[in-house]
Amino acid sequence: MEVRQLQIFRTLSEELNFTRTAEKVHTVQSNVTAQIKALEEELGIPLFDRLGRRVTLTDAGRNFLPFALQALAAMDHGQRALQTGAEPSGPLRIGAAESLLTYRLPEVLRAFRRKFPHVELIFRPYSNATIALELEAGKFDMVIHGDGLQASSSIKSVRLRRERVLLLTDASHPLASRTAVKPVDLVGENLLLTEAGCSYREKLDRALALANIRPANVTEFHSVEALKQCIALGMGIGLLPAIVVARDLHQNHIKALHWTGPSLDIDTHILWHKDKWISPAMAAFMELVEDKLMETESDGTGRVATRRK
Image 1 (spheres, rainbow, N blue to C red):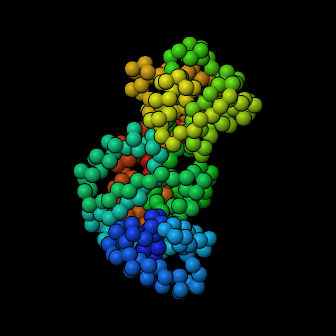
Image 2: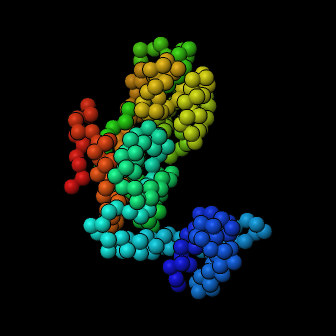
Image 3: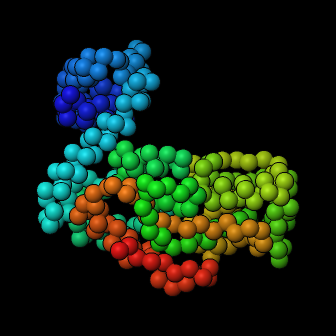
């Protein structure tokens, strides 16, 4: 089993297309086909189904993928470990939610790019349910995550800050003028929410379930920008971090409700696998994120953020 075969397998599992895979790994399509065929023959089982022009992972391919990723990550870490003390370089794979990537991280990215131009930053969305597995498999070097992750002995973390999360409407909504909005006030309302699994969405879902409250309708969005626009158009009550809607609130495009139910705020953390080798690039990015984003004063909850040792 050769490293090149695993690299091609990884890329094909992402692209599910032989032509695009060949382009990404800088070879011809016939070589991709030959390398995958050789790997399958060595393992004694097909890793992909070829159905006309469609390519899909078989069950065996899905089972093999995390081990292939882990092996490639280990080799990459080993190579970079030999360069300790050198200028940070190479790929850095980071999982981050859209709201953080859009509204918290641009200043960090600009400063990091200026200081470390040879690091290739790769940002990807992640799933709350599989963070630990994805970090262990090496899909991500680190994840910047809102709370909601179950405790795991394999994950290390540093708390950065608390993000306020708001229930929002257009100014004409009947609840917009209320001095207090409770869970019961959401009975029969149309809710505009991020997809299931989002940390602050889960907090609202739990609060409504505990109060036995059912909204009239829930519309899910993959994009916080689209969700924000629909709130402003009066399509329902939305839920978003304050940082996402700060400008809209200032311009009176939307209004924050005076929510008196359970707190919907979330804590943001940096997460990484406990056995992960902290490369120079990873250490530099962590340091910059902590410097730019970490709260050093009490956030009103009695807790004070602590820097990574």
